[in-house]
Image (cartoon, rainbow, N blue to C red; front, top):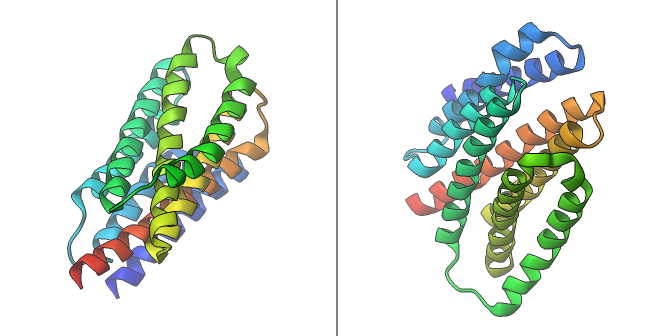
Length: 219
């Protein structure tokens, strides 16, 4: 029962945040955006018997990232970027812990698609980034590595938890790419709802993977 309430709370908070973006209601944005990750953290704690402290930490850093990215200016953007950078580094740690064996072919297979995606994105944005080029490059490399290790894990196991994690990583990359394009290259109103929508979906997919991971560990 509590899990259902937590799921409803997550859906409600996410929906109200998206409504705020669509109809440009700043009150909804500033009230509900910070609570999306807190609601997901609450849902996670009610979905498992034993929480993964690393994953809980990811959600906390994602919360801080959301808060700082609500504000304009380079300093809040840098702090938000660093918050999500730390979150992705922890994601990489979580996925690497799942990988039991690896081959050169699997590594190469995983690197190629994410390497191409990152290269195209940086090539598109490089003239617009200015002094943020290094920051965005480091962040882009890190989230690409999250995708790489997730794909390696999926190739190895073909499990449900690995596919949820992989799709979550891919959707997360799409969300961040849209954010970068909107901020530095081609601002469009539609990007606002697409960025937040894909971000929420990505975080939920990763949550599903973490719940499966915890259930398997318990069994």
